[in-house]
Image 1 (cartoon, rainbow, N blue to C red):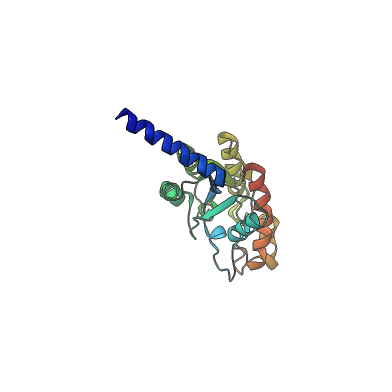
Image 2 (cartoon, one colour):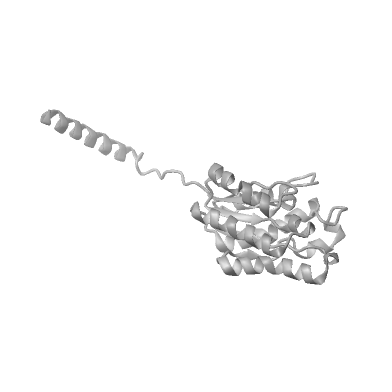
Length: 214
């Protein structure tokens, strides 16, 4: 038995030397991309668009720039922070992301959901992501001023407060000034149009690259 084991070990050593000679063992193994799970609503799902949305355009830019980053877009039109909280665990289990980027809250604001409830849902989503070993990013939201100054200000502070409390990087109102320009908005003045998508990409991609290695 001992002689057989010794011969097997010698044979394995010879095979390893042969593979090294051919250079096969020196070939690097493929490295998986840094994966970002995007949990969002219609602003990221491509609602009303005739072409690709900003997340798909971001993936194209990452690939063209040699950045080993991939966004898995798990956005659903009409979703709220409560909906995101209910489904984020399934998304994480399915994708096993390195990062989770949350783009939710706009529909909560349009429905007048209390800011404390929105903040609580966002914090719990961040906790779930981190418990699963993922890091987190947050895309901020705003709502139209016709909801009243008190509510709109409290709503906007939700994202700043959650970012500060959890240490999650925040991109304030990720659509930015495009929301005020009819040339970049659909007729409802809520959803960005096709022309806006590259500009949104150009806002989000530098934010991602600032925080995510890829």
